[in-house]
Amino acid sequence: MSDKKFILVVDDDPDLVESVAMKLESEQYRVEKAYDGVEALEKIKAEKPALLVLDVMMPRKNGYELCDELKKDPQYKDIIVVLLTAVADSVTSTSYTHMDGKTTLADDFIPKPIDLDKLLEIIKDNMEA
Amino acid sequence: MVENDKLRIGGIKYSGGIVQANLNYTASETDPGRLLFRLFTVQKINASMITHNTKGDEIYLSCCVSNNDRQKIEYPIEGYDTLKNRIWFREELGLLSIFPHKSRIHVLGYTLKAFSNVEIPVYAMATSISAITFVTRYQFMEKAVEALKSYFILPDHHTPFKPEFHVKQIQP
Amino acid sequence: METIAVYWESVIKTYGFQEACDLVLVNCDIREIGHLGEVLIDSQIESLKFALIQDIGSKMIFRCVVEQKAEAQVLEFFKDLEQTGIINGVNRQASVGLITFHGPHFGDRYGIAGAVYDALDGKINLIGAGFSGSVITLVMASREITDAKKLLSEAFEIPEYV
Image 1 (cartoon, each protein chain N blue to C red):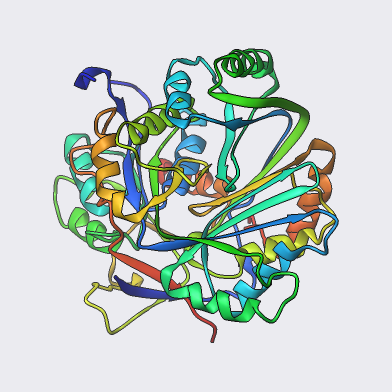
Image 2: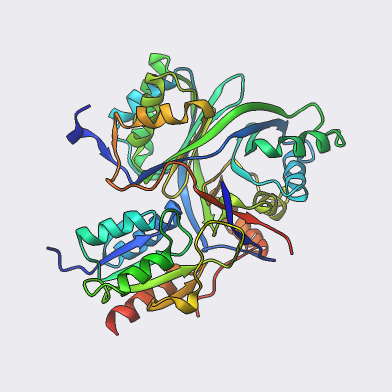
């Protein structure tokens, strides 16, 4: 197994996933990608990452739901979760589940868009803490 | 193609029904393209994919918009001499994206070959950081995905092909 | 399909601009797109920075932007292909640059393209452009990159590194 720290990047925007992944790989992290919460959970079960960069609004399972599941599971609660939140208001008349940031157990929150160097710094800080 | 030789990709996505609005003009004109995009902004029309090519003095613009937005373009352009009778439409289209390409030109090659094998037309294509996006006939979306599986492997729990929701822009 | 969230920002925010200069643009017209796919599979072309296809009715344009180090290989590939009749009209343009930028939900929002074209205001000779997914890629002469970036920075916000 590689000595490089393993990070999973999860977002339904493939271009953002690729940008973040390329940045992290250039800093010698080992990176896997997922494009929604269900796929992310399966990848986590296959190999537990040290840190998760996690979008909120995604199909099938959103970031808040996934974070909640992980933080309540003894096997995964130590995964560092960095949530990426877009500035959008929820639509109340929808079957889609909304939770808000106050109820989530994420380790850090970053509003989109973010400078990728800043994201890298936040990830390093969280990894070292 | 045997499974082991297939290329691994992260996902495939396709859109809802769209129309493609096409506009050709010369560089010496006072930018009909810019006027068209201002019209889009005023009418609150999202162009989900745009390709622009300049060859010599000729400019070729194609813009994909939702089927529902076609009338919001057609009626207003009647009021502009630089746009009236110049925009031509292709209808019943959709966008299909495959990602990540990782700058591998053979991902483009396999996709074009897959489409050609089952006679799926390509009206436009553009690469982005991660994805290659094609404009093709909406009725062929599922057929296109099946054709792509001849050359590409998706993850076991890959994200759905069709969008489940969208985010809409409003003005307060 | 449901709308699950609504979005508004008075200034369009991006993840920042990326630029690349001294690239090479190769153009041709496609005559047989399926056969083009086959030969691209076998090509050893690397360093693809951007590609576009556009069916303009009378013909199908293909353009790709590659790094300078790949120029000779790419040109030889396309010239050989021209002999087969799969493509025609191969030409190249050197000293080409790209500006690429993206932002949250660019693919879902109106006004983005209008902001780009208004910002450039006819002052930049745009050779090509692709607005795809959440990404905007602009192709121009390398010498125009600095001016274009300055114009775009006035219309789009780059996140602060605090």
